[in-house]
Length: 425
Image (tube, rainbow, N blue to C red):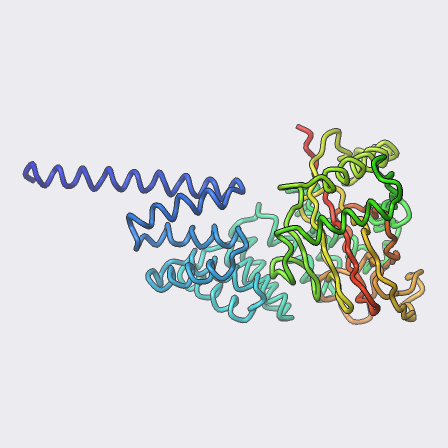
């Protein structure tokens, strides 16, 4: 090799090292929740190496994390076009399609990823989850079990498998999988939620109630309005204006559990005066609630009462017929909703499904206890419903399944959903 060839090789190696450093930095930003910074790095890198499939893939992931699904779709499709053997890119495209509710198409992406890498645990998990959503529980069980065999310490396929086993009517097996999940993470909200359902199916009601006692764990806080306002109505009117003028307010965003309604991003990212005032009085209410709870080292909620905590606020506006499907909050300790405005609603009482349900479903009410996955025929979970009340913050452990009943009536229902995150070291 002559001198010119050596110089060319060294230059190529230096360029490759710089590219790898940039890519590693972008991936770290994505892992640490900084997708915008990752996007900036990756766009810069692609200007230099426009056919770099790895950079293109992670750029698509950054757009996905930013909620720009159209751009993510464009970039990820281009990635698999130029690199059809790139299993991770097919998996990421599948995740995007699942998020935008194109589930059959996501299944094909996950299958393609597995055809390229038969040892890809995450793709097995994603395929199992997608098949669960499509109602193919037997196939879902197969793929989730495959994921666990490859990576037994991954918690996600285990708690999804527990919900599949619940749907198949195999509560005892589901409970064993839940317990294995809780060995990995004692505070896994999905596993705790599934444990409640499995225990109820097995008629172990006292054990289930230790985790999900509506009387003990659902709290209604009447917040004290700031002294600068004469009435509660005046304060809530100020909050309404803040929500309606929030730039991130989006009608039926695909990545939120809202139907016939609008949702904001976290309003504490750039809070105005009204939101700052609301944060102050809500913290006062949460602090009072915390002081009333009795510490229990053996309970997944009462053992984590935080000394320090952070908050997120997401406002929503529901129109007539609007509703929030059943869900939990995976990462927080306590969740809740503050009712800013409630329209006059026409209520329709429905006969309870069994004697364990002690309230009626009413239009617009907040309902607890119904999971977001299929249940075996003949089983009805224990539920409880609460009416929306202006000026009240309804709080509950984040692993409680909850949804809203669609309402009929005039006007919009406006609320602020909040999550409390443990910050103790």
